[in-house]
Every structure is written in C-alpha cells, then in structure tokens.
Image 1 (cartoon, rainbow, N blue to C red):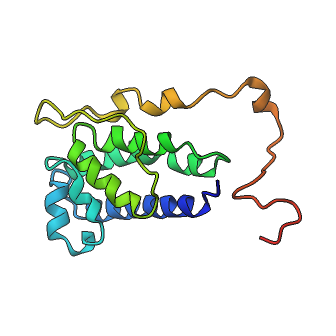
Image 2 (tube, rainbow, N blue to C red):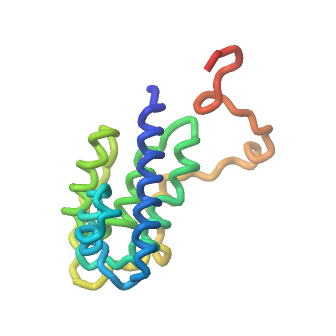
Length: 173
C-alpha cells in the first residue's frame, strides 16, 4: 500500500500540533484552560481539534501531553511500514485519556485526511474523576507493547535506505 500522502498529512498535522502548542505557550498562561483559550484567541481558530480536548486541560498539561503523544511520530513516519496503531494509540492514550467523546471528535477530524486513523483501537473508558488524568510519562505507553526490539544483528547492519522516503535506485523521483 502506498502511504505517501497519509504520511504527508500526518506530518502536516504534527506541525499543526506544534504550532498550536507554540500559540498556547505564547499566551504566557500555563494554568489557563486550552478549550477556553481556543474560543478566545484568534491565533487558535484554525485548530478546531483543540475544542475536543478535556474541558479542564490546562496549557501546561497540554504541553506535556502533546510531547508524550507525538514524540514517536517522526521516527514512525520514516519507517518502511507504518505502525498505524502506534501512531494513533499514543495520541489516544496520552492526549485523550479518560475523554472518549473528545477522542471520537479528534478521530473524525483526522479521518477527513487519513481514513484509517484511529480504527482498530480498543474502546476508551471515561475518566471516573474530574481530576486531570495521570501524566503520561508516569505510565507505560501502549506503544511499548507494539514496538519490538530489533535483534542485535540489525544494529550492526549498514544503514541501507530502501523505499519511502528514499527513492529506488534508477528512479527519477
């Protein structure tokens, strides 16, 4: 399957998340609610998915969660085979933990560009408390279960780049 355009759309979304984070950080209000700022700030109007976040998520919490949810994306997007579950499950677990309604809205937004995003993941449970969910860094990420350790022989292999994004020998692209 040719995932070039999906990879591009996911990379653009990662850039959008970083831009939204930058705009939120520039407000200088780490204790402000992201959902409230998303309604008030003109610079955040293009990031509709921010309204899908938990209503009590602060800018500081969003910052930590975005870092945890998306740190794996650049590496995963460069792999020969996309680990679709890893891409979506880190976002589900780290950014929408305890917020299944927000997750559904976010998935609907993402599926406009990447139709398979978020499919095949287990149903989320609603948070039982109104307190912010545990900081993702304290918990094991679902990615840990989906990423297999490379055999020692692969570590010593030459860095041969085959397939996307590296063109095949003799190709003009």
